Length: 472
Image (cartoon, rainbow, N blue to C red; front, top):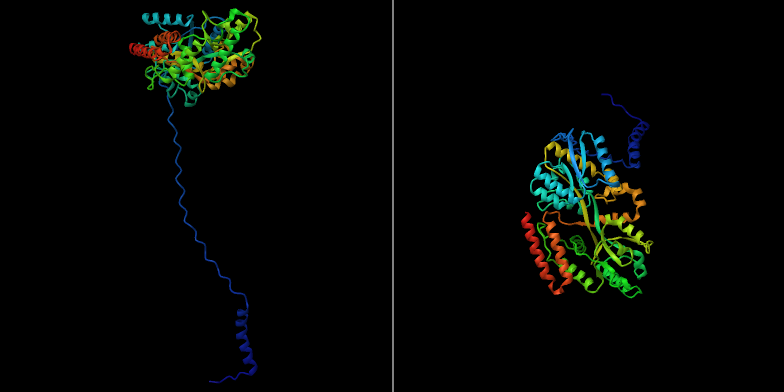
């Protein structure tokens, strides 16, 4: 083999060609480390979308179309009667079922009750009627009245939970009997309140209405002292509080003192409670100290002539009291108002709910009756009824619809703030008897010895239990 002899120049050239890349690499920047590929987390598959549950359409259980029902009421005269007939006509011409309501005026409540008792005997009863709850319960006990809960709870024609919650609790509770059946549905109310002469109270040194029982006592006694010490002997013995022992007044005081006339179970009466004893002692003290007195008739004239700083009345008595101030004249410019019954820690009123009942008949007529009541007690219809009748609302949604009426009737508007405070008397059929027992017992308390109060209340309890047993 031929050997190649390299020149010295070629040798150096080859050596440099080998070394230069090595040196350049050594002097250059460090190699950048390539980051690892990011780990991609496995994603869970999206949840399966559930199809929304579409509720089955509710079908009506009965068809009330074309029914004619009779409605017995007590509003046949004057503006109130005209207002009722206008509402009945409106329902008859606008309801989608073609239901016809025939309104029949029966006079007063007592007349209506007499007519209903006779109708039960003859079988010629109405479909709808107004009535006091204890009367409706009496008819329910002989299987004449329907339980309105059935219609309220009806899935097609009934009320929503929001609609039920709109009714004031005290009013809503009034139409329920001891067994839990709803014998009456509220459509209006008045309230047993305290009438208070603001102008005279300020002249006596009181800048605000009494908020507690002791403040009530202080003002009543101050008014009594003022009349006893003036130059008019005819007003001696007057000035404070006109005290009647009617059951509605006594019940209102019991409510204001934090008590009730029910027992703890809500199935009977109990008048031997601390609250009832406190009320008895409070009224007895006012009477014995001369800070309360009685009148032979409605005390509208006494209140209008400053012979009474306080009287008790239904809010429905407002126009009669206003007329008394105009008739008497001397103090017609006095400012007067309604206030709640003041108890030891605040006040309340006795709510007089007006109820409508449904008489048992055919399913179609009963449902037609309910649909009229449901329409009548809607906020829009009740606002019209209040403007015609002067009664107070039974549900909160009505109040915003009464702006013009409230502005035009500021004294009536005072009752708007009081009716939600209302507590209802029992709606039991026995209450008619027990009411008389309450009145007689508290009349005896006023005339008797304070030491006799516990025994008198025990006797009242026994009489109430007997009345309850007789009507159960």
